[in-house]
Length: 319
Image (tube, rainbow, N blue to C red; front, top):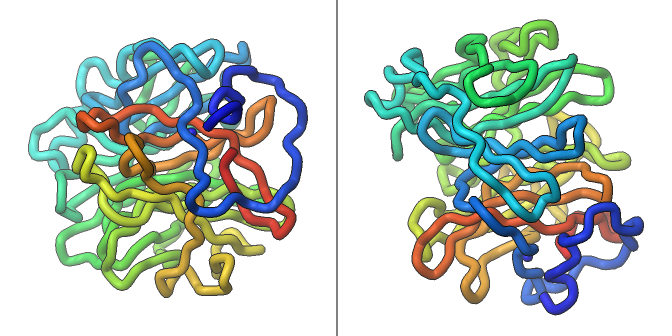
C-alpha cells in the first residue's frame, strides 16, 4: 500500500504483471492512493458492468460506497435503509451489520452478511440479493447458518467461492475453532446440507475473515490473524495458504497445515498503517487487487488497496 509502487494503483488497465519473487516481510507496499469517502471496515467489492466499483462494508444496515476509477469513492447509502428487523435477535437490537461478502452471479448481486455482537458466537449469516446493487433494492433471502453459544464456531465473516465444477461454497468463521466451510445450493444461495468442514484454525487463537480465490492450479485461502477493531493498537495481518481442492487441505509456504495454525504472511502493519486485514481479492482489468481496511494513527478505519500478484513459486505477494 512505496516510492513509485505507491502510485501504481492510480492507473487502471496497466500492463500485465511481471512474475517475480515475493518481497521480504519488511518491504510491504503502502496503501495505494484513495480519496473521498474512504472510511470503511471489512470491505467487499465488485466491478459492475459499467466499469464502476461497488463496495459494501460493516456499518448500520450494511454501508455502500461507489467509485468510477478505484481512487475516488463516495457514499452510496445502505443495503437496508429501512433496517433489517430479522437480524436483531443476534445484534441485541443494533442496526450495525458486519463483514458482508458481495458478488455478481446469475444476473444479480449476492450479499452474504453477518449479525452478531462483539465477542459472542451467538451469530448468524444471511443472504440478500438485488438486480442493481443499489441502496434500498435488496431483498432478504433468509438465514444461511447460525451459531449458538454451545457451538465451537462463530457464524460471521462469510465468503462465497464457486469451484471449477460450479459448486458453491461458503467459508466463514472467527476465533473459536477457526474457519469453517459449508456447501450451498446454487439455485437458492442457501445451505444445501448439514456438513461443516474445518479449513483453518489456530487452536482457539485469533483467525477470521476468510477469502478464497482460484488462480492457476491452486485455491488460495486468505485470512486475517490476530486482533482487529482496536484502532491503532490493532495487530491484524493478512495470511495465506493454498490447496488444489477448494475444501482443502490448505498449507502455507512451509507446508504447515492451516488447520494447525499455518499461514504465510503477505501484509502486516508498519509505520502509520496499523492492523491491515479483512481482505478481499478482486480480479480487475490490470490484474488482481487486494482490498482491505487498516487503521490510521488516530484510530480511524480506512480503505486499503494494493495490486496482488503470484511469484514464481506460486505464492501471492503485494506490490
